[in-house]
Image (cartoon, rainbow, N blue to C red; front, side, top):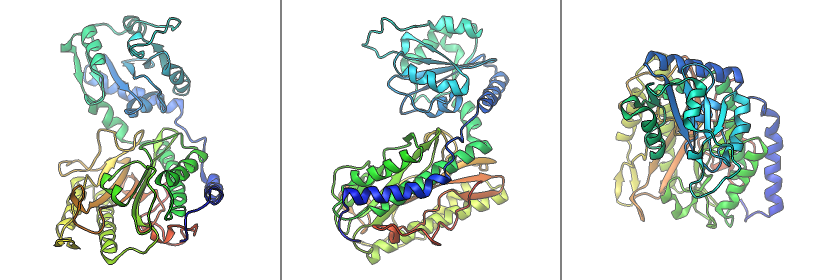
Length: 456
């Protein structure tokens, strides 16, 4: 594997992988204005069926998914913002006077309208030349009366108190209802174009992760490794990331999903890494755990093989559930049954490590914050007909920080997959065991993810 790389060597590795991947990326694959209009129409039909005259969603740099899907606002900056969807016509995005200029550019593609509202500005700033509109004027413009029933499409966890109070003051509390699933269920089902865009995002994820694996050597800082992935993602067309790029080495694996730091990776460290590039609004993902500088010990290898086994059990359960149209909690049950029979040697004898979270979650205009579509013991409905999901299986080698129970603190495998009818395929080509790819630029060859199947 050798020692840490020079900046020149790092640059050459990144450039080689970018050049290899770039011809596969279709930068022009975007959501069309026609598709946005179809989305509005579907939502407006559902609103009418439930007796709503208006729907409202909010957004921020953290909670981007709803308005990204509705109006193409993929890269919000600074202020929080909102969107009003009337029963007929185009939605109107409500923005502040700084980030609103970015949103103006974004909605040109979707065809939504935009206005600046004083209520959305940074609280202690003064914008004496801003072109503010009043909330009441916006309602008159879209033909919505103040005796309408209003659906709040955003989660109570995300929407600011002031925005709820604005709706209450305008329409009265008795006419304002939280109805998050109204939108969540619609955007859970994906179009062909959405699935194809997700494939591009995951091609980028694989490339960035391959570059990070290649430069993962003792003496490299976590941030240097992350920087290589960030460079590759940007070069291939990823505008931002679904989560801060993850590189956790050694004791930092107690953070489970911690962002990269200036910690120097030591020989023999277990390292967990993850990337989530955002391509034209949609997210890809890859996460894996491996050892740097030395082969895994027997205990570490057994722990990782247990995670691989869990991945296989869950993906095979997904395939069965899709083929036989079973309740989605069948998938969760199969994974839990596998864990119940799992026994690994640890520091305190033989025991079963625990999983930190749900095996399957929804994705789209966020990496995991769609609010609907995760597979749990309580989800009795089948998987959607045409969806993009992520398989995120992991085991914890500890219960309390600083007190390891196994040689491995945390081991994870996360990928994205698509489902269309009864057919399922993992977007990612990255093998489940990436150990042979650490510290070198060897091609993946035949050691691909056994569940990989290209959507297109």
